[in-house]
Length: 94
Image 1 (cartoon, rainbow, N blue to C red):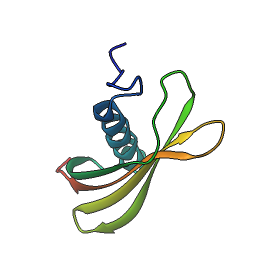
Image 2 (cartoon, rainbow, N blue to C red; image 1 turned 90 degrees about the horizontal axis):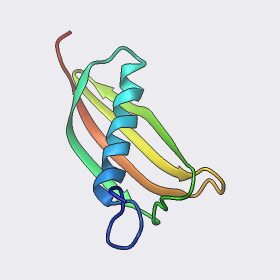
Image 3 (cartoon, helix red, strand yellow; image 1 turned 180 degrees about the vertical axis):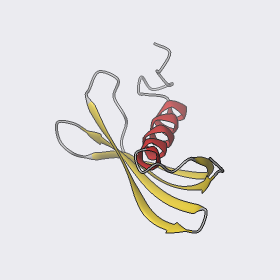
Image 4 (cartoon, rainbow, N blue to C red; image 1 turned 135 degrees about the vertical axis):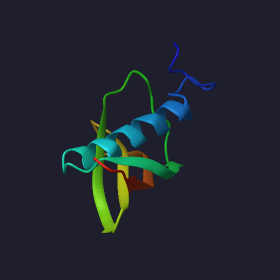
């Protein structure tokens, strides 16, 4: 499949995309319009394509226009963290 990487797991680029998206949504629900400035992803375990996953994004800290955000991808069944990220989003004019 298109999401599949070399090992039959979700490609790391898509894992990163999902984390970036869920962290952006965590800001959007707080009415914060911001662009990703820095994204750091840690791949803990393979994200298997046939298993249900849970995405979480939450604000960690805010300093002026800087929004420090965290995200996780978990195995929906076991709760294991499969990948996690921290990012810096910069608020943009409305």
